[in-house]
Length: 169
Image (tube, one colour):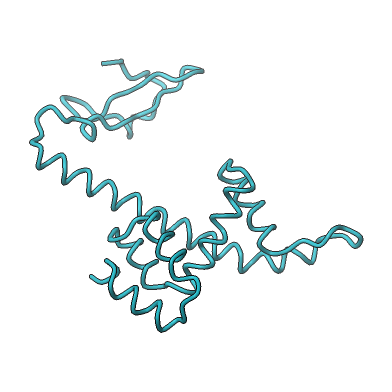
């Protein structure tokens, strides 16, 4: 184990046989990481499958939060268009939101535009599927597939499809 430098805040140090490990970074800084999350030697296959499902549900919940934040950014982007100087090419709220998202997440504009469109489409047409994503009962790929396959359906028909998928608790 790497010794903790004296300059590191004492409130963050853990003594004894603990689950925290220290990893050196550049500039003599240290990063704390959790080792027990990746301890798979003692786990049974059933435990590993359970942890795998938990990880997938956590990823889905994070993606749902990401979609909600993107949708909120889109609602605020209309106000940002007032600052566009006259004579500039036509800019849409979707393009403004995609530019913000691509910059913040270091995505390409194409990927960000696709994710903004997905967030808006899911919020408008499939709110229960979006809630299922947040609850970890649906994956982002399944949400995208549901939206792609129900493009030409009415809202009532989309609700029937949502009832048939894993969108219920």
